[in-house]
Amino acid sequence: MSDSLVLATQQGPVLTLTLNRPAALNSFTEGMHQALRAGLDAAAANPEVRCVVLTGAGRGFCAGQDLADPMVAPAAPGEPPKDLALAINTLYKPLVQRLKSMPVPVIAAVNGVAAGAGANLALNCDFVLAGQSASFIQAFAKIGLVPDTGGTWLLPRIVGRARALGLAMLGDKLPAAEAERIGLIWKCVDDAALADECAKLAQRLAAMPAKALAATRAAIDGAQALTLDQALDMEAALQSQLGSAHDYLEGVAAFGAKRAPVFTDR
Image 1 (cartoon, rainbow, N blue to C red):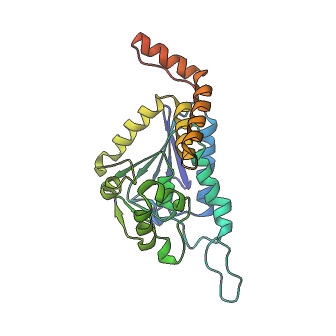
Image 2: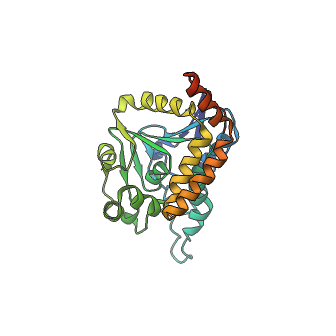
Image 3: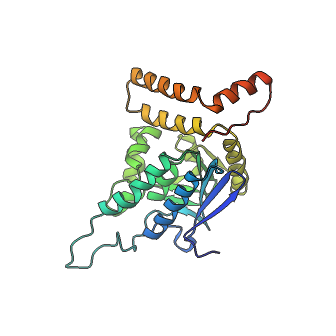
């Protein structure tokens, strides 16, 4: 396997980014952060990419932060303690912001464990498909920290305050099937079917109006901080923008002609 920390492969309009530190369960280092951000930036800038899949090499998706990485490793006795806010502000915050601003849908294909920042990395994607043997662990409390990578914002909005507190404080392993049952993820599938299910979903999304899908993500996330009247105003503004775009005109024309639309906006 390549020495690259993130592998990029493209099949038609679908780009797959594979975290590639399998011996360490794809745990984050500063270098892997930089490689992943570069891959996402390249995908965002490439008009031929209409869907991104994020997955992990080997037997895990991402075990979170590599605690031996120099940026976060505890300081030696007598030295000033590390300020973990540096890693959050320079690595994790920009990563979450990049995912939320992608002009195309992003799917997390979770194969194996997704723990700590790795779990919340997946949850920041638009769709989470997980194999039956996959699991999600909010491992932060086990090392005296709080959920990061957007976890404090995501968890109560996805599963409610009670479950969010339980997941975050107890740090128990949540099997993929249970994660689907409580609405934490989109779907749990058989391990052997994960690649095919992900490919079908990615191709379906790639054929859809990417600009409208990105606006839908932004609208649903943004509406959580708005009143109903403010959300209605936001919807009107977005419909005004999208209504003058090619994909709306193409969608209406295709509907009238009873043919498949060809969406190109991005």
